[in-house]
Length: 288
Image (cartoon, rainbow, N blue to C red; front, side, top):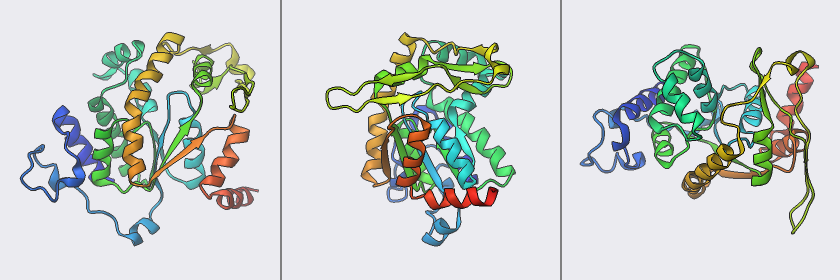
């Protein structure tokens, strides 16, 4: 984890010049790259090291697809930290730090946050986790570009990349239904999605995720959850995500999972494709 933190910090300060695939640096010593970057690359872990450590997974998917929900559930199940760059951005927005006002402008315009800002926020989070002795992770929202994927590939052995997929009309409706409790900070969704099957596509039902009565009067809508901003955010994401998906597909690490519905329907099927049904059952028995 320390190696990743050091390399991310180096990448953040190097700006847009770090465009070479990090996996080729060792075999191309004459290549020009940011000072000190190659020296900070961690050796690839052995099979024994991979077997002994916790999982190191990445979750991909459009904004609003539910990456945070499923990544959070899996992090609790597997005992690893769930690191969501979206949460890191929101925490910074709520602060009075130097990046706060810059992020306000970016988010309100529906633009995606730059690599440099994301890397800086992630570096801070990894440093805190290292101090607490964290092992393994599920990354949510990173990497978002091939450049970020190459940075990550240079220092960490990613076991699996889960790409959650959901049809766009449902995604838009989900995003417009999102609400946040201004007091407790928890996320809810007022959208009741009931799409009939047509043109060969199956129907889909997703019940609302309603807040408790104490939160109902304190719900607020995110400033960027308007139809125009949501659609633009999805367009930008789709343009950028295809190269990242192909990057991991070529490595044989990409698992594409089409969400069949809401959590009650999707969660068991996701556990099944991840071969975690027994793990889940064992944990439930232990808690009983």
